[in-house]
Image: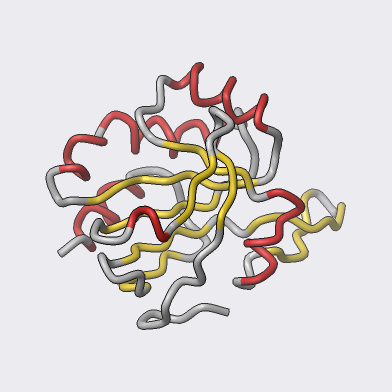
Length: 151
């Protein structure tokens, strides 16, 4: 499990447009890396739309927003286009990254147990260190607490 002050492990993956992306390429900027459960679900849509509506406020604080979850390039692209997202959605293929940092957890929904991503947001500083972690995120107004956490 990552803790505040830890260096976020670098990784390379693909965004919704099929382009190779990595955290290393974002060094020098703050990064808001939010792990969400599934493309086009109500909570994930609300969270993503809130980040999109307030995107320029994050940019003024030298922060880049990145959404990350399982899914496919096609589902990410469709979700990003439907929501008009001005930031990247990165693919966590086979939950490799979520597993590596401890976000792949057993869940229980209406008595049905399954594994999935625990909705979590990391604020990463310009040098790649985790400056703040928001676990078990409640999406309503989550963007505000993230914006306040950016120094």
